[in-house]
Image (cartoon, rainbow, N blue to C red; front, top):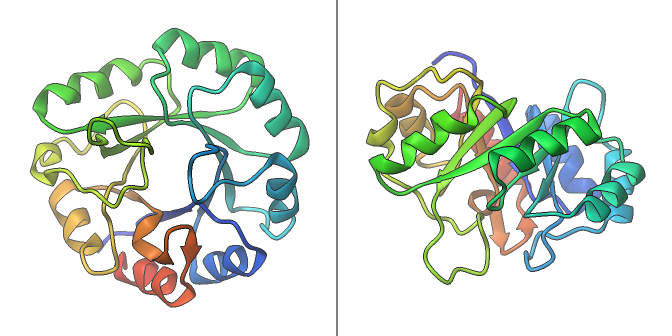
Amino acid sequence: MPDVSVKICGLTAPDHVRTAVDAGARYLGFNFFAKSPRYVSSQQAAELATHVPAGVAKVALVVDASDEVLDDITQNAPFDILQLHGGESIERVQQIKDRYGLPVMKVIGVADEADLATIDAFSDVADQLLIDAKPPKNAVLPGGNGLAFDWRLLAGRKYWRKPWMLAGGLTPDNVAEAIRMTGARQVDVASGVESAPGVKDGALMKAFIDATR
């Protein structure tokens, strides 16, 4: 299997950060959505960032965040990428890129083939795309729900104009199949490597990364 980059998202504890790094994660995600069991404050994220070595990207996950919130996050910790996980418009993505000078990863929820057009639209402005399962109606969380979508929708669509990452319901047991079906070169996991909501499991993180290889 070709080399695949892994993002472990929703880290909240220094030992989990170190475990993810030691296992080979290339991106670490920190969640600033207050309703999430994986939420961290900007001060907590700043402390966690001290455990991340050079060469591993630190990603700030936000949901429809205001400039005030983004100012607080970016001024407290040295993030490499801003992950926009809400209903941000193309115009808002561009505003954030211009204001903060950081690469932006836009999350696109997919449920059926009609959603693929949204991926194409954001390819013009986002630096990376994260293709996730669309959350169910009335869901509290925009992601991290442990839901997968039909990976066959991405078969034969290996190359958008920007790098992309596969997310949604991935686990150590199914990630190899997801990669095979979609051609993904990058994958993202949160709930699939947890022993309880928001509690990362070191053995599961290692098993997940091993499975991508």
